[in-house]
Length: 176
Image (cartoon, rainbow, N blue to C red; front, side):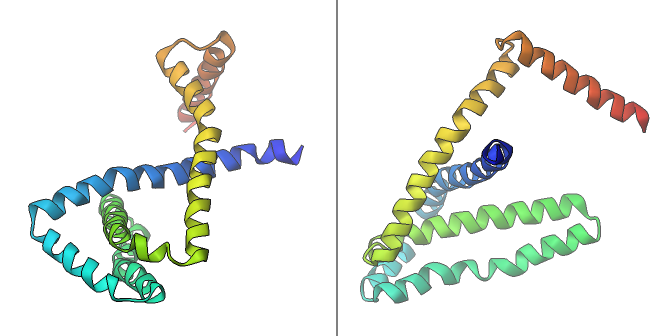
């Protein structure tokens, strides 16, 4: 019973996790193109050479530190939200999110071999990969149902449920 009640929560968490993974997958090649377009490839090689001389624990510091300067940018986004500058807040937070994932993907690409030398980090990395696969497995049936509804090839109950939701939404807006 409890498992059934928590199913939507697990699906929501899985969706959030998969969005993060999707961002990571799609921003990493963009960051690679940016690195190739501007002289960051030399910086990447310089950083890789320096990381090779570090211990795995110090490499972890190199991996974590670049994201810290993004925290004030996110706080600016929160401040903008609090003062109801919705578009500016949304843009700032989205920019910080993309920049953070991009920088993290760039740094992780450089530091991964050294980080994976730490047994606990390797286990965590494997856990995250397994979690990602489990989330995909959990979300895929829901995603398939949503796509079927959007395409119009779902069964009658789902289409009927969609009409009921639309009718309810319309009645809520009319009540205002």
